[in-house]
Length: 186
Image (cartoon, rainbow, N blue to C red; front, top):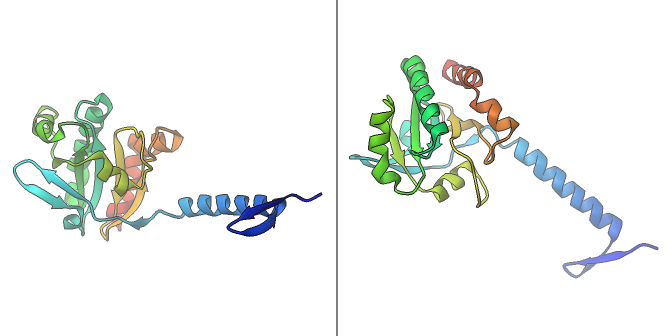
């Protein structure tokens, strides 16, 4: 006996519904795997003493856009490494930009930049803007987050919202150097 399910006033056999569900899931999986590289959406952030800045103002440079929390020890360590990358690849077109997304970030970024001796701009934005830019669903995410953007404004690499093997692979120092080297060569 075949069971039927009603979907939008259409009576479909249950096996067909299961097949459709599997195909939709497969399409979503394929789509998410094909989303990179993708055009970076416009992103607005704020720098102390400067005001609003747009990501598109960095077109022509390779951008390592790092989202941090100023009080996060992992973010502090990552920012030190990003300073090394800026020193090493800045003359070849790399621009590291850190954006703090924690509470009161607007009051904390200047001290963060000074305390950790970063050699790149540090600004702030909201977690919601960061989620929208990265394509994350509402909810929790780990920091730091990173997007590597080519000279034409396409995101080639980005961390997933939650810590995972993929997150660890991209945030690995050797992997970051490899990907940045690849992008500055183009």
